[in-house]
Amino acid sequence: MKKVLVIGASGQIGTELVLELRKRFGTDAVIASDVKPDCPELLKDGQYAQLDVLDREKVWNFVEENKVTEIYLLAALLSATAEKHPDFAWKLNMDGLFNILDLAKEKKIEKIFWPSSIAVFGPTTPADQTPQTTIMEPTTVYGISKQAGERWCEYYNKIYGVDVRSIRYPGLISYTSLPGGGTTDYAVDIFYNARKRNTYTSFLSEDTALPMMYMEDAIRATIELMEAPEENIKIRSSYNLAGLSFTPEDLTKSIQKHQPDFTINYAPDFRQKIADTWPNSIDDSAAKKDWGWKEKYDIDKMVEVMLENVNPDWID
Image 1: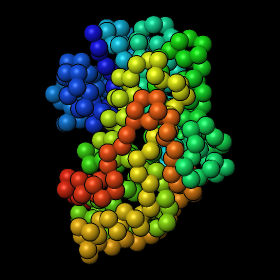
Image 2: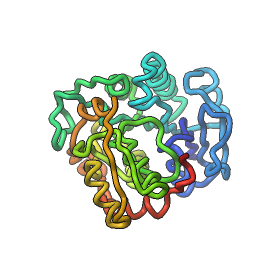
Image 3: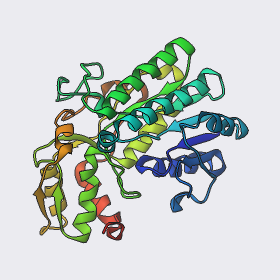
């Protein structure tokens, strides 16, 4: 019987992932967990546990007691936040991964999802239609930890037969929770400010093109990857995944189709240097070929949904 544990369920991806998993497999089949003591309001219909992924013994005991079969490991310090706390970012992102990989190595669980990121690429990576296999010289703590994590996932699969699956997420856009400290967060912040103030100041320059994806597509891709037959999963480091690619200027023009008076200003900060090392667009043909990936949202469809659903009262 499938029993899923989502670690890091209070974050931007985790909230929506838990909701969709419960819709597909039943509320009782999915446990949400996070280091935070309180369960997010949206997830209170099912089981919630306070778990620190760095507390190896507690996590292992919890998994065995609850007969967990699959883990989605989302706990991490994201790009911009990790630059401010590099030591802790490395510890959380790497030790947390080892604690879960070792569970599968010891046959305590059957399957793992662990997200990588476009942060694994760097300034020497081909920026346009970045290939699945290419130069990877990340220059951020987050990117370095994700690149190392990819290598360890592949190693655990090859040497120990661990069924671990991964996606290199682009920037993710959602209205169900506030962003968590990433370089692509402008593409979420902009909607709250559009609704509340009709203006926004971007921390990235107007012509900074980055790969993005609407959250619904990202959640669907994650579950489709995990539900695909094991023999279809040819890549055990992490799959490239693409959806959209746009600049702050492109996003502004799409918003102005709904709010013609909306204005944007530009004040690039330290996150601009991070964004400058990332791809403009991604080649995800391997994901399409191996497990049938196909995005559904374009920029105008995504903007329409975001403007309709963001709650402007969530920001000051």
